[in-house]
Length: 360
Ligand code: PEP
Ligand code: MN
Image (cartoon, rainbow, N blue to C red; front, side, top):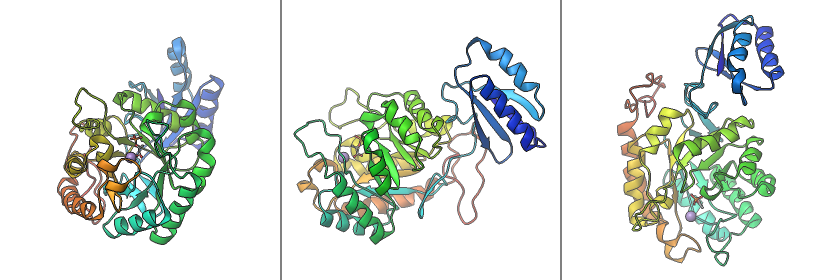
């Protein structure tokens, strides 16, 4: 449930509500929206629901108490109707623009990364990706350059001005990854690593949470709830394909997850057609599909010489292929931007100079 404060509520009344929630053994999470100030009551309510509701509704400054019907609370649209917009350096995710995260699957050398960073920046990427610590299916495969790769990523950021996203695989890598990286990536294999989620929730860095290949949309949102409830509101979600009976593609990109997530949550949604398909010639068509259904961004793997890549060689684009993908997705984004994707949601405000927000 969440408490809707009256527009005339004073700071003392808001504090009063928060301390009552704490006294009940629950945690208050405040959200100051465009039209109202609300406080979510988070924790195990159990049979005390009615009693708690009565107590809170009788406090001064309280207008009403609204139940949250979803199991995910802070990440739900019910609690937080406005889109979350994440700003990292000059990049913005979730404001109706299209974020493009591009770079190699793995950072393999300084030269490989800097060449790729220059090329993707020139073609319009807004965020640089590159794996330093790699979650590989085989322990005998290239595991990433680790801290050396983080240093190259920081150098590439200095050179291009692009913020950097890289994966953190374990809580004990978090300090070093957060030191060098602007966005923390939690990989599909770690989507339900709850201690890692909580640890990322305690940092100030935005987080991109990738959907596990066997995870439902609700499980993805519950995983995001761990991060947000630990104190980090800057979470974006990534559809990177799920495992189905189909074997021609590495995974099956769940295109419907994009508008579905936009309906259920205020968090931005990114698509990753590289891992979703595993085949380079399918990357642009699936990137287009993701953008067409309202994705806030695309993550794509780009390598100077994909065939020689130390990981995911079959799905990485070369520079020309990346430029061609950009030439396709940018007009698609212009076309769908401002389209009402979800008639159940209120119309999004129109941002000056744009056609409005992309998805509702
Ligand atoms: C990646 O983006 O480098 C990666 C390993 O992706 P995923 O976690 O989606 O497999
Ligand atoms: Mn990869």
